[in-house]
Amino acid sequence: MKLLLDENLSRRLVPSLQAVYPGSSQVDLLDLSGANDHAVWTYARAHDFAIVTKDTMTTWTGLTYLDFTTPGYSGIDNIAVAPAVPEPGTVAMMLAGLGALAFMSRRSKMN
Image (tube, one colour):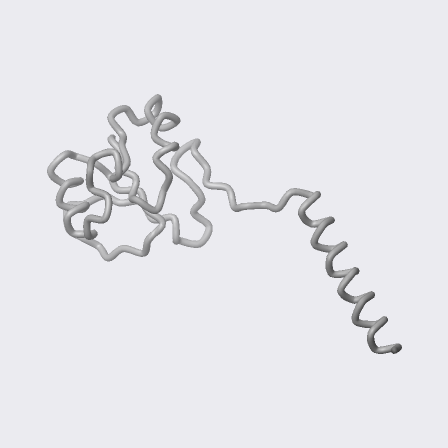
């Protein structure tokens, strides 16, 4: 099976997929950037690709696609899509900023 990553998925994933899914690609790498969904689907069908996307797609007969918008579905085989998690330092800076805002708000109310 060859995977065709939609333009909303990074082309940097392609090298990681090559070992498990040889021949996989991404729409930008195939000069399909900006093409409408029908053009991408037609290309995928003609070249035996399964489309991987984060979009919500309608069902097309004879076309395989993998939808990452389905709740509870997080990846393909052993390739997982992890949600963004802020670094602890980022959370600490945000809390420090909120504390400073609260302090300044309280101080201005006292004056």
